[in-house]
Length: 440
Image: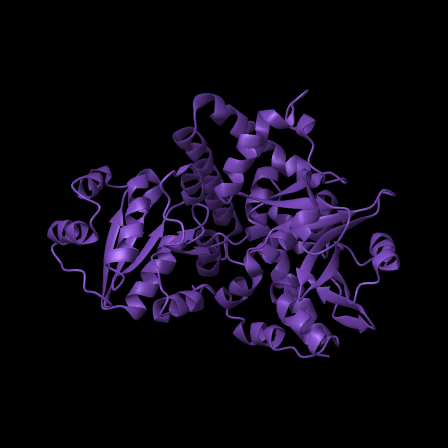
């Protein structure tokens, strides 16, 4: 399956400023598959070390952190020589052995001619704990579950994807195409973007099989809770994780600690939230009441919403029946639009890996997302149904007069002055559309 991050790996390889690359992302999002595919197509050889599968690899880094010594030991172990500028060296699951992270500094300083990618399912957690992290000596990339664009590619809809990517106006597309895209989106919302789930469905068209894989992935996540945290922290993480679908499903999606456990306080779960966020299992959107640049400076980090990384896993946790796909609009509005807001959060994160924010006013008006683009603030109102009511967005525009206001909904494209409707299925291309609006 084609991943859009592949093109970024190509740029990394050819960059004169290339450094060892740290590839972050949650378990099962396809990091190992992507790197293997990249190595197969772009290099003469792959040198692969998995530190979770083979703990004895630790000994390769005990003698010295000199990169040439490490490479000699690796060559002797694997029986083949890693060639500068020709081989790709892949250190996988390096959160198991933090010293490997430290070694990347010396590879950059003393052996920059070697191409190295380091990945791990809990690498974000490991980095946060590292006292000797090689600051400034590595490049970063984060991989998310497959977004809807990648799902379209996997389903053989490359022409439709190109149509959305290359659209140079906000006029409605033919209804037949609009309906087809909405049908594909309903399937995607149920399946989500975990590559194994998508590949299984592409091969077999079996919803039941896909759901079983989703459940296996959720079990693997829970296994990580106990494997990589203390016993007391494991319980807190499990409590918090189980509460996320309920938190998302509320009409008011603002996170409340008491919905995790009665009388719970922020101090009880702060470490848990950081762990899950660093592990890539949740997306967090922070509240902003004064939309000014930079948004991060005006955010209230004590008020936030928490979203699942993947709508398919959300559906598996909520035990949503596959029959919902056959209904015209049910999955869009199910659980107070939980799937839709989570979907948009995931698509925005995959598009630019920036922090998420939402806006509220004292009068309880709320705009689901606001984003910074080209020194302007753009409000995004998400609608799960066909309603044209935009009370909160109107409240925002009356107060701040933005250059552009966007509604994201199941409706077709439309444009009226500074107001644009973008269909849910095209959120992945939102930065293309913002560029288009600016240029006009």
